[in-house]
Amino acid sequence: MHATPSTEPPPRDTYTARGLRYARAYDARCLHRVRASRDGTTVLEVLETQVGRFAGRAREGVGDDGVDPRWTRALELDRVRVRESATGAWTRASLDARVRTGMVIETTRHVHERATAAATPRVVFERDDGTGIVGVEKPGGVPVLAGVSAPGVSGRLNCVALVSARRRREVEARRATTDETTSKRARVDDGADDGADDGRVWAVNRLDAPVSGVWLCATSVKASLKAREWLSKPGTSTKTYLARVSKGSALTTPDGGLRIDAPLWKNAKTSVAELRPESEGGKPCATRIFLLERFEDDDTALVVARLESNGRYHQIRAHLGSIGHPIANDATYNDDVSADDETSFAGRAYDDDESGTIAAALAADRDPTCPECDALIALTASKDRSRKPLAAKIIWLHSLRYQFVVRDVAFDIRSDSIPAFARRPPDLSVDDFIAQLPDAS
Image (cartoon, rainbow, N blue to C red; front, side, top):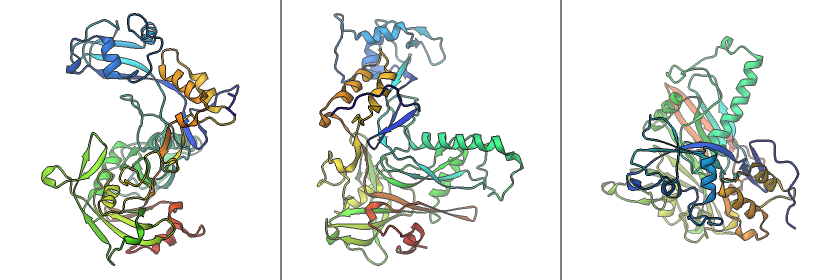
């Protein structure tokens, strides 16, 4: 039976339903500089092509003049403005006004973020030593940075935003009860500490959205840049991952591990990493893998993958695929896995719960100038579950451990969990598990 909407929308900025997290829709101002290819066209043409707010959407309700009435309504509400240059004065827009290269169009977007996995990231490492480094346990299916298709909008459903929001509350609570200026602890003299901690964090590295495990961020921009320097120093850092790969019965690795040394090139059109020689744009990188265990029931194997230098885009995923043992549920690099395999996702977006949580939130947040609102309300109301898109992809790759050195001080930041795909005993601790790994020093 289809869910009946509850009478009240969720009170918070985000909410969960059937294993997915959603952000309440919100307004955000976005700036769009007119491209040379649009020079001499109209404001309307730029809005419908370059901004792309209505691209690919049903044109129901389009007037006789071919103009979506919601654009007219947006203009009436002063949600579209233009200026001649980056520093010029804002003026009200006219849909038929001609534009020139370099002009700026500002739109107030009603943002609907993509649903993510419902699990929230949690801080697993932080100490007052002046480095500003924070270790976070990132759930699979949650992006590190914004997944919002609106320029300048950072979003709410990403690790940076979620961790920042939680730390901001903790910092404010701590300041309300203690005088932080009296707290003095041993600090690493590295020049990263550049001011009071206001709770916000900045990414040090990235993990792909489907990947779980420990991820690093920092409490300031300067600290983030410093941490990237430390992680990139040759011979001083090691990143350890767990992966479950296909064709386990055929996989063997020598005692010292199997080293995959193959430059990678990111294909911007397909968002896939491809093996290419450095002479053709490939970036040098190497991955060392160790076989831990084979699983006969599905012919998979558990492996350790180590990076001994800066990681490249999709490095482990692409390298494992290149030797014929891709991650077992990674459709991007494993041709035997269907891209619409529902078991590789956290759920289906806009599949409402029995309380009608999603329907209530969409109804409360509906904007008459936003076509996505009506489209998502209709999608949520649909009884055809197959229409609802799969959301929050999760693959069997887990970031287990980061080791690096800052001014002769060794850091060893670990995940606080062993992923279920590793099939380890539930009472096995992370530390004991790491101690059993090859070359665990």
